Image 1: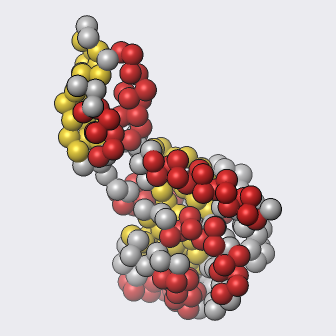
Image 2 (image 1 turned 45 degrees about the vertical axis):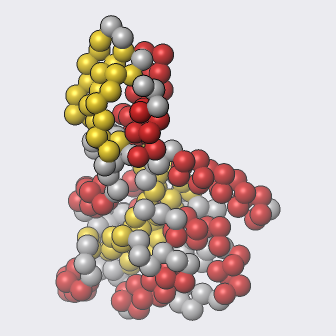
Length: 239
């Protein structure tokens, strides 16, 4: 069953990469509030359970940034200190959502007695699965109940860190803005007229690019935008 789940995940992951859709992995120590954050961000209905490894099959949801770009959010298995190698192997397919991400949102339980140790434990696993060089946002959860001095200490010590509460919604807007600003941005500028018969390309530009202008001409849609390299190549081949 695990192998079947892995095959389905691999297929979906390859499709997302082929479409150049940025991916965000929500990672963190077990019970830090990853699934609760996922619910806040996407209303995905992810299982919220105070239990070790409650999330085995990463839930992937599509999200849209405030400027209209599509990206994915993945809720992943909770990490623990000194995760045994056989567990890393068993959960490898779920952990691949982390190592293959463009951005990691590392959720931390700000109310835990030793959040710094949990941060170290999670980073140890991320490094072991090859994700150590991925851009990381530290999202400090439970700001509504954690001691304020602990929250402030974490914010001082950790770069690119934000406090929030998945329960009350405090800080969610700021966290979302940080996620969106950290997403990889399209870099190839295009000025093209897309035939009306290729409405799929116009849709792709809207989903994956940043549009400066768009006009309708007799021969098609005139569009000036920034897109990723693969999409730019497809548009170039229309000529």
